[in-house]
View (spheres, rainbow, N blue to C red):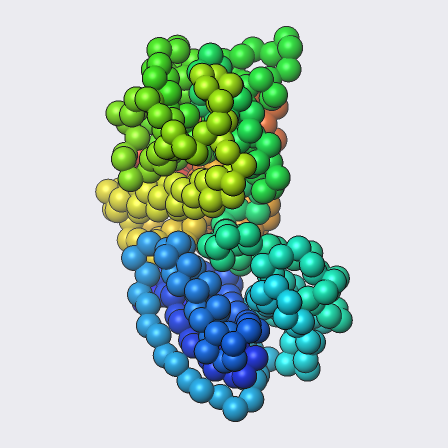
Length: 423
């Protein structure tokens, strides 16, 4: 299969190694390696189980739908070292409560800033006692913690590998009269987990065109969390938000409260249901019991990431189909990149964004996609909902870089648009 490889190597402190390869047409420049190193109580079997649990969570997250997966297990007497041509990699150091992580020589590539091929290490622990758990240079790196399940840190690992957005975003659609307290609580809990959250009562300043701002925020966030209450469809604003999300193929997920109705356009597999015993209070003042928040956050983060992956996959397929219909030869449709050849045999590399394009996307296109002389490069992303202050700089960047910017609502006839762009 064309493309690069995401390799997962699970190592314990005694050297047991499991290699798991996910192959899904990645651009070669984006090939990465993940090294999971775990120390745990109970000897090598417990350490291996800790590392394997995270591996299974990553595989379950399916960062590349339809990936080919192969597993090979090796027992090594000493830590494995990689050659200088190894791909960029991330060391994930896992330590449960009470186990001190010791810095060793084999960890140096991940702790030395001069090692260009390595990403910084990511310490992970079961409790927030970093100074007591991690030693040496690893103790200076901001750690990630789980409370109830290692599944809680899955998104952090994928983000550090560049397989999930660096700053997750979400739009909360709800009825104030029915779910204000819960919406406020979710806003705070998601913000604590680094989410950029849109909630109308916090994010629309006075004097702003409300509908225009809603459109902008829907497009910017690209994933909508609907709080399904009894009369969620009785509000023109929630109907507008849901209809816009559906029409623009944004991610739609639901959190259904007891007595809430199911929004027809949201598939039941993307619905989280709350039970009566998970809430305290009643009516619009009801909110989650404190002990239910961590588990719900894990579920929402997982649904958010899955929604963005579905959206990216759908957009990528739409681009490939449109180009094929225009007589192009699609060579590769993996990750966020579609590689194709127009009828004049000119090669094109098209970066597909699950959210509105940003400066960093044009930078990526310049570094990784526009390197071949004579090839064409384009960026596809949702811009139709953005306010002019956000869309105009993107149009300027497109003209400056000579990379056509195509809105996701204009993918039909893409081949003709690109050939007529003059790029």
